[in-house]
Structure formats: C-alpha cells, structure tokens
Length: 122
Length: 113
Image (cartoon, rainbow over all chains, first blue to last red; front, side, top):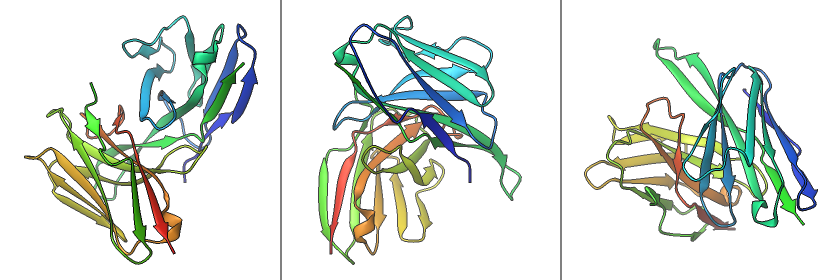
C-alpha cells in the first residue's frame, strides 16, 4: 500500500534555531500535501496545504514566516520551523493524497498520513 | 470554534463487547466523514469512511453510522479486541475526496482482556 514517511521522527533543538521536517510519499506522486499539528490530548489541527510548484495555503492564525513550507517535487514537502520557541514544541504530522480509480470507475483521493515528528524546543 | 466534537475523551470496554465511539459536527457543509485510529507517537491510520448519501457503512468489525439530521456519527467495533486500544479520531470534509479534514479531539479506547 501507499506509504508516507516523515523524517525525523523526533527532534530536540535549542530555542532560536530552525528545524526542518521532511514528508515524502514513497510510492506515489502527491501534488498536494497537508501539514497538521497536534497538542497533547487535542485534535489534529490543519496548519497548511502544501501545493507542488506553488505557495502553500496557510490556515488562519498560522504564521507563514514561522512555518515555512516547500513542496519542490511531487514526492517531497518540507516544513521548517524557524526561530523555534518552546511553545512550538508539538507533534507535527503530514498527509498526502493519492488519486486512484475504483473498480466502479470513480476517481477518488485517499489520504495517507506520515508517522509524525515530535519536536521539542528547549 | 470546534466544528467536529468527540465529547468522550475516553472509553473502556471488555474484550468481546461492542465499542461505540461518538462524534458530532456542526458544519452542514460536511459531506464526507472518516474515522482514524492512532497509536502513541505514530500518525493516524485510516479505518473507515462514509459519504453523506449513506447512513451506514460496514467493513468487517467496524461499522460507521451517520445521522445527518442530528449531525451525528458513530463508530461501532464488534467484537472489541485488546489490539483495538488506541485513540480514535473522527474527521469531516466538505469534499467527497476527503482531502481537507477537520478532526475531532479524539477518544481513547481501552479494551480490557
């Protein structure tokens, strides 16, 4: 089946540094990827939609200069947390949509999620 | 504004019994609903989905029921197994492809042997 991989799975960094998280679709091409953030015991919150070859679309309240998203190829999107602060510590998850045809001839897009990346900012 | 709500943060059931997880939504534009299962420090994995044109979808031990008038959906797991212990998220989308999702807060299911 389709696999979406994130790297690194865990990262600890000092306050003020930048951290890059990669999201790869391993056996399919994804023109659109999504980045979510999860705080403890809370739901997954959509941060932004990453579009291959164009600018990402950010959700309201998400700082685009803080969370830089680059979708340079059809299999890779990166999220860079710039000038990280302790409040940026969270679990970041990406997802990618794979389009396919059902046996009934319907074109559907199924979402697959990465394993997540735990960021801890000291 | 929490458009998708799972009011029970946790649920504990005995192995072999039925687990019922509930989800309510407020946005009447949602027309596609999904359930995901999540283990600690892992990404969510897809379980089952339902389109708003249906009121029930079944896949093995998992059945999702949708009550559009009440804006309510539920996930039934029967029989429950210890390996089902995880956090379950319901999610909703305004597109049938289910790409841009709004998630509930999740319910921690514990199935006791």
